[in-house]
Length: 83
Image (tube, rainbow, N blue to C red; front, side, top):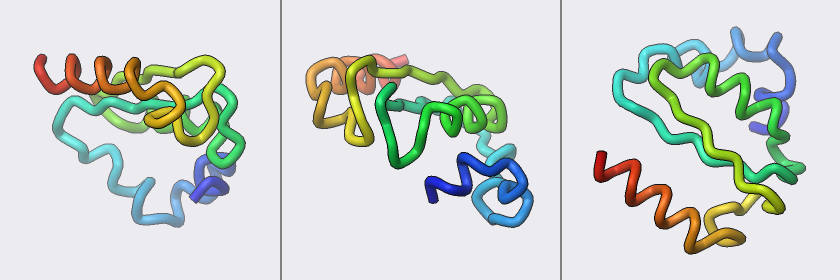
């Protein structure tokens, strides 16, 4: 999956990227700034491709921002769902 984010040419070949523009609900994207599995460039591509997407980048976090920044992640997710 990480390679599909890093290589825009693959976007056209995968079902994920062909259909992502159809997401009809607000979307919260969370990313770790130091993610080496899916680098931050992938978050920027995803943010651009998904309508009504909001991106939050956690500093000093890798691939598992939801555990590395547990409290901040939970507050962010709860706030997003509440609105």
